[in-house]
Amino acid sequence: RGRNMSHVSAIMLASAQFWFSQGLDQFTAGKDLRNIALLRCNLCQCCKIRANTNVILPGSSKDHDKKSNAETFLQKAVDHLVSAHEAMGERDADSLTWDMVSEELAATLLVLGVRRRQSSLAGSGSSHPLFLPGLRLTPGAEKEIVEPMERSCKIYESLGTAHARHQAAAAHYQLAMYFSKVWTCQRDEQKTRD
Image (tube, rainbow, N blue to C red):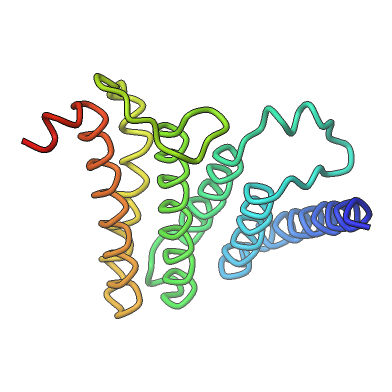
């Protein structure tokens, strides 16, 4: 039964992506900025579903989907939201839609940064962090983790709502956790306790 439901979910997700893409083409041709942004948000959600499930879409192989990890789908989700902002051009075009896209972008960036942090500091196949003395991330690897979380903070702070301030605090917490784990990994326990 679970296998059948996964198949049904995959078909529904593929159908949703198809129709959202078709709608996006039509609204792009008509220069309907609000609906372009909203369809990009829907396509973002499709990517996030793919990032958080093991749904194999019709027409894709299991091997291909094994190679495609959650970070790839989260990055595609971010790309859809950035494209939504680019289509709108500026907040004044439709402030309500702009802010909705901004909040979704901030949340997606935060999840992407956290996912990258978890995969960089965890052993393969393990959810427990590796505490190896001398573990060093390259500046590029560190930037891939920190940059999305910092962008998330800036977006939340720019929104100025109580909810956004709370989410900005959560993003700052995730950054602090990352730097704490890196610091712990780079020193042995004795030096950490000194």
